Length: 122
Length: 434
Image (cartoon, rainbow over all chains, first blue to last red; front, top):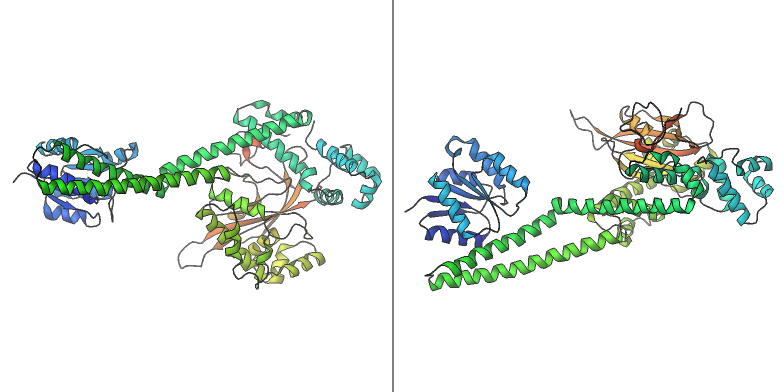
C-alpha cells in the first residue's frame, strides 16, 4: 500500500473522483466531509498529507489549517488546499495559515495528482 | 448674486402669478406692505415662521421659497464642482442666479452621476459580500469541478470497469442537472437584482428613506390602536419602495417604535397641547410621562399641518452614523458621508441624558436659524457591568433670526464655509467666512 492521503471535502462526487484517481495511482485514500471534527480525524488517521477544501460545514478550511499548524505533530504536514474561490484574498489567507499548496476549482485531475506526488515526495 | 437674493424674487413671482396685490399678501402674513416690499426686493431677509406664513398664504411649499431650498441647490452645485476639484465652486450662487436652468441641468446631472456611482458600488459590494451570490457561485463551481474531474476519468482511463463507468456516468448526470439548476437560480437572482436597482434606490437605507418620504414621515393608520392591529404589516406589504428584506426590517423597527410612541402620546392630545403652550419638548415629555427622545421622535412624526409647522429630525447611533433623516427646508441632512460635528445631535453623545437646546445658524450667506433640541439616551435593557450603548435624537425647529448667540454650523465639511473650525475633517471648497 502506498502513502496515505486524507481528503477533507464535502462534495460527494468530487470525493469520489479524487479518491478514484489517487487510488488508481497507488495511494491509500481516506475521506472526511465535516469541518467540525476534521482536526481530530487528522490526528487519528495520521496521514502523510491532506487535501483540504476551504468551504466545509462546521468549520472552514483556514481555521482547520490554523489548528493543524499550531499542533507539533501536524505543524509540518503537507496540506493541499482546494477552494471554489480563486481570489487573491483566499490565496493570501492560505499562505498566511501555512498551506503547502493552493489550488482553485475547477482543477484538472492531472494537476491534483501532480500536486499530491510533489508534496509527499518533499 | 447672493443666495438670499433669490428668495424675494420667488415670493414676488408667486404673488404676481396668483394675481395678488402686495398689500393683500402683507396683510395676510401679518406684516406691513412696506416691509413686504423690502423683502421682495431682497433688502430684508425672511426666514422662520414668517417664511412659513408667506408660503402658506401663497399656497406653496416653503421649500419653493425658502433660502434653505436655495442653499440645498447651491450645495448640490458646489458638490458637483467639488467632485471635479474646481475651486470656482465659490461662484456657484452666481451661476445659479444668472443661469438657473443650466444650473438645474448641472445639479441634476451630478445627482444622476452620484446615483449611478452608488449603484456600481452597491453591485460591487454585492459581488464580494452577498451571501446568496457567494453560495450560488460556490454551487456552480462545485458542480463544474465534479463534472470536469469525472469526465476526465471517463475519457482518460483506459481500462475502466463497467460498474465504475456506470457509476461515473450517473455522477455526471447528477452534477449536470445540479449545475443547470444552480445556474438558473443565479441568473434569476441577477435579473432580479438588476431590475430592482434600476427601479429604485440601491441601499436598504435609501429604500427606507424613500418609504418615509413617500409617507411624509407620518402614518395615520398607526395613530389609533384599533386601526393598528395589522397596520405595520399592511404598510410594509403595500410599499413598492421597500425592495429588500433589510429595508423592510428597518421599516418594521421604525414603525413599531412609531406605533408605541403614538399609543403613549395620542395625536389629538399632542396637537392640543402644542396649540395651547409654547414649544418645550421637555415639558411635553413630562406631561405625557415619556422620555425626551420619544417626545422628539413624536414631534418629528406629526402631520405637516401641525401647530409647529414643518420640523426636521435626525437620529444617530453611538458611532455617529445617521440612522434617521428628516431634512427641513434650510436644514439639509447629508445622505452620503458624515454630517457637521457641531450639531448638538453629536454633542449629546458626549453628554448622555443631558437635554441640549441650542440656536443653530447654517453657515453661508443667508443661512436660516433653527432651534435644535437634542438628547442621547441608552438603548437596550440595562445589564450589570456592561456600559450601555447610546442613541441620540435631535429635533430641528425653524426659528426667527436674531439670536446673537446662535451657533454657526454647516451641513458637511466639504461645502461648509465656516472658518477655523475645530471640527473640520477636510478642507472646504468654499471661501471661508470672516
